Length: 143
Image: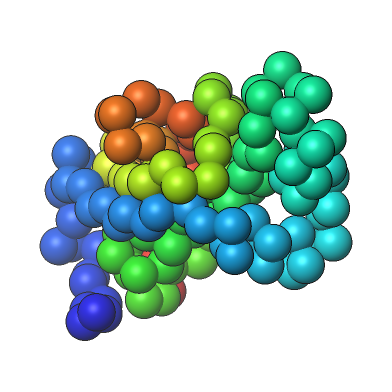
């Protein structure tokens, strides 16, 4: 994947970028290991079968991590510095689902005598059925 750094002026309101990934058992287990979040809803098949979901679900922040990936790699890409991120988890994500994270430029701001350039991004993650599983908003400073 080619990574190109864009200048603030190259972005327009409405610009968007996306990335997609199919969530695997290995992804869920690696995320559990990385974060030390071994909640049995994510890692224990027998426990999860008895839950309201009837199956294991991915960690919510795994879908949030895909938002980070699209911001860091594509929108705005290299030099992006996260200032904040609001996320709302709307639906569970099951192993085997294909997720698409999208970031859309909602607003461009210039602060501190033109030295701080910010993008306000609408962020969402959809599954293979185009159902929003995670939504939110991010503020990104371009460095």
